[in-house]
Amino acid sequence: MHKNTSDKNLPIFILMATYNGAKYLGAQIASIKAQTLAHWFLLVRDDGSTDGTVALLKHFAEHDSRILLIDDALGTLGAAQNFGQLMKQALALSGSYFAFSDQDDVWNPNKLERQFKRLLQLETQYSEDTPILIHSDLTVVSEKLDVICSSFMSYQGIRNPATPAPTTVIFQNHIVGCTLLGNKALLEKATPLPPDTYMHDWWLGLFTAFFGITEFIPQSLVAYRQHSTNQVGAGGIRWLLKPTTWYRIALKLNRLLDCSISQSQELLKHSNYQEPRCKPMIPTTSLQDFAKLSDYRLAKRITTTLKHKIHCQNGVLTAFLYVQIACFPLLQRYNRKGARK
Image (cartoon, rainbow, N blue to C red; front, side, top):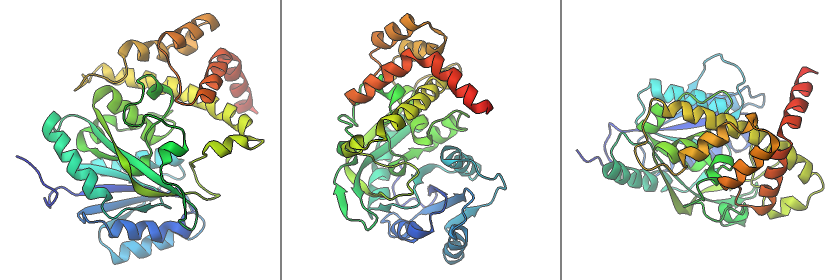
């Protein structure tokens, strides 16, 4: 039976993870309430805010029965696992479709409706059992919502967000979580998040790259607000000119490499009991070899990376990636030593 966007039995669960977001929270919730597709539930989990965020959320929940504040007494989990816990909650509530929301952005009024219509078309084409993820571009804006750049993807130097080179997906996330809409098959199969997940949206992007369908809408559907307390920000090319940038990049890439290897290993575990519904975007052999990268000696680490053309879409970051791969055992020992202090 073909579904339509007016089907009252198919709400979209919007998952919002908050942390000290009181300053901009009202604008984001207002943009959700202004959606042209109104059949949704907003599940919010706070990660230990101290700025009045929780009181504000309780106020919104008291005035709109679609807003549900999750109190699970699990404490502070961090951004990725905060969203991961919300995914579990959506599953427990039998959610059929889900979207992620940041606490400080502003959605276009037709964001949900446009994505949902396309998602239903893809489910008709591929089946409801196929994990499907839809994401879009964003407009990068200032604290006051002044436009900085009309395209986040361009701002970040991501040249092919719709059709990224398969092996860039292993090491570089192309999906911005606050634009993501997914179906129940994705929610069921990709939950729970692995413990070493770098970010929730990257894990889901990896999952659909191997087991399902990923589709990119090139138009901006979200105003992506930049401010001093962003958990994840849009750096842009100008960020590379700052004096501390290169050290921060090195630290970030070290963690990215570590997490990307762990995520590849977790994805292979899923492949033991789930058959890809479509031809995988990521070649299985590339995933298998990359998952064992930390076990290889220097020469094999480099030749394996070159063989599978694992890289970033940014040439500078690719160069740093290869330095990280060459120094991986040394960096791991440094990390473990630092962890013991």
